[in-house]
Amino acid sequence: MQMVSGRTSTRGSMNTTQTDAAEHAAELLASIAETRSRAAFSELFRHFAPKLQSYATRQFGNEQTAMDLVQETMTNVWHKAHLFKPDKGSPSTWIFTIARNIRFDLLRKNKKRKDDISADELWPILSEQNDSLDDGYSLDNDVLMQEISQYYAQLPDAQRIVIEKIYIEGKSQQEVSDALGVPLGTIKSRTRLALKKLKELIVNDD
Amino acid sequence: MMIKSHPGEALLYQYAAGDLSAAMTIVVGTHIDMCKACRRTVCDIEQKLCEDNLDTIVNVANQAMTKSQCDKMLEAIFESSVCNKVENEPNDILYLEGRRFTLPRTLAHNSHRIGDWSKLVGKLWRAPLTLENGNQTNLIYMAPGAKVPEHTHKGQEATLVLDGVFNDEKDEYKDGDFVLLDPSKTHTPETQEQDCLTLATLDAPLHFTSGISRLLNPFSSLFFRA
Image: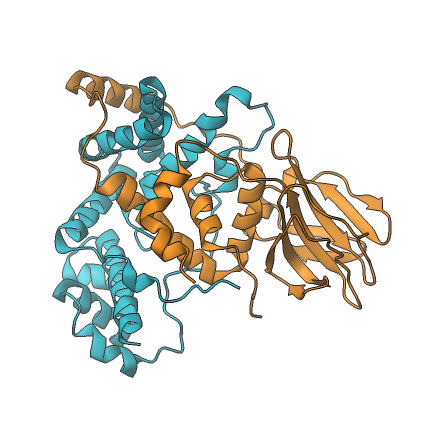
């Protein structure tokens, strides 16, 4: 049996700059999805293309293949932005998993037969038919509110307010979004980051 | 029900990095569908991989993209049409021997790859899963009181219990349990009163010279501590 607990605390939590960057990227993805904004995509592209290029160059050691990975990954981002779920992870992690899938297929390109399985079938992250797989980030129900309350004072204000409105006042994420005048995607990513942070605080305290 | 046998962290890491064979990926991925704990771990690992491979990277490519390359690629992307590959309708229901099984998500997405069932010796049924050349991945159904003849393995064998229970000399395995068999040991799986549906692959992980060993370094303290 493998121990699966107690690791979260060793992984660094995001600092404010990264959180802001993630929120901004999530907003860009939202406007790509909703309005097909080319300006939003161009900004996202200029941020991620060099990073993807660098990742791919280290993976393949071949510039042309690296460029193929960048183009295929970002093409998916352009067409599939609506499949990004801010509450499931950060935009860069989502883009990384797309690149991971493209890499899997590119590595097999030469020996691939027509019916061979592709990465999208193995990790159906871009499937339109993605159902209601249950949310890996929700806290276990047996963690009582009282136990949590002493921790959430330690959250950054922006996250704490969202958590209070959702978990104490019982508002939906959409209602919080309307009340604060902040995009829904941002509320979702703040919720996710706050829950993650709470989990870290609780684990550290054990 | 508590899943007690999980893939090791090194395997989950290779899964998340895309470094496993298709066969091993589908077995580990199906376990993850069934196991909330491993799903969380994989989320954490994907985030960590992203931090190491994308977020913190200042451009180290020999030749960073020029502005004109960027513009050209952007234009190509805007002109591309949605490539909606024909998705096979996921099917999560499997009927066999008068039993009805529900398949986890990854398998349901690949139900069209499940071949015909054939009856083997000793109350065993087998259906191949067609993934890619040169691997052997099968759904194995063991009726109650079935026994697989004693055997050893040359390659690595991974077995995932989808439904039911089987046991070998060492232990008992139930829904969601992932078992990696030691190639050097003999092995005699059998069922008793209950039947058992498993997904099994005989296969060694691929070794990509570019990935694993180097990328594992920053993780070793997390992954391989006792």
